[in-house]
Image 1 (cartoon, rainbow, N blue to C red):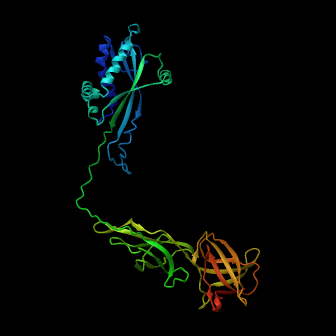
Image 2: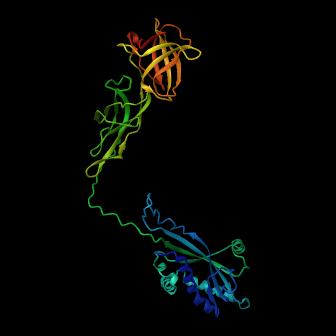
Image 3: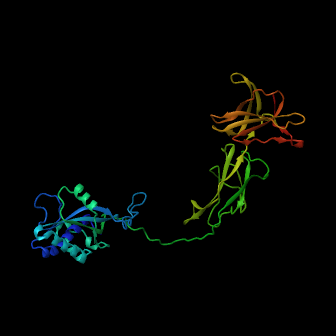
Length: 419
């Protein structure tokens, strides 16, 4: 691998390559490597000057070494910079004897006859200078090829007017591609070889939930503390896997598992309203087998409604309902209702009152209890302008309705409150 001295080694090897051609073209001509506007005497005259004016990442190899590190910064492979070197060659000598043109012809022939730097010449150059020792440029995997660049008049004028603070002299440009510079960082030891392996194959049969109902009565509302059933397909995990249930994001142990039906109890702490259910089937991997979350299949998220209920009262068959005849300011009647589960902060409560008239009224009245600012299992809902009488009561929390007890003719008979 090439060290950071690789760029200097390319420049010096190019000097050695051009030197015999230049000397044969013009007697006494040499090759220098300096800026075209250095102090007097630094440039070869007669001769050619080599000036590295620009480097650029090699388009083909710039990302070949990626990634070089793991997420925690551990080195995976030696970083390697792939760059192209842009050289400006300027020619000096007696213009009356056309020495610059003669030297230019010699350089053009040299780089046409030797478009690739010979590895033997690179090695000889490295050995001739102590500061280039150990560069290892001769051993890099890619050869270094020189290609002439053709500047437009505008590009040439910009180069000389902006970069160089000297009058124009005869010049041409070449690009050397590609130079690979490797980092000298110790690599971690290779991973230990695999002594044994376990390979399992399983069909792709993802679980799917088509319906969430109360259990054992599918027609009943789902309420806090009740059992539910997940109806679907592929609900039983294949061999080597397990079945897990998430209700509202809370893991829950199922009571029974069948390919098309899973029954389980709802976890505590759920709030009324829309809830979610999902079947996870992680794999048991390793020796001994250990459950690996995130592997295996997972169903889509199914939604169901957790309905609130009006809490039972102190007497058998009664409900925790009461009337506050003077609530708020100005005072107005309000209905106080205890609700299961606890209504959470941010949930909106509505109250529906259905008058117990004969014949039964087709519609009742709806009162807005607003959005709660704190968790509470008791809500107070103003009922301004409510006529005296007996009403069937229904509470709505985030759109989820409490159930009514229906009598003959499906008329609601409980829970009731008298105002």
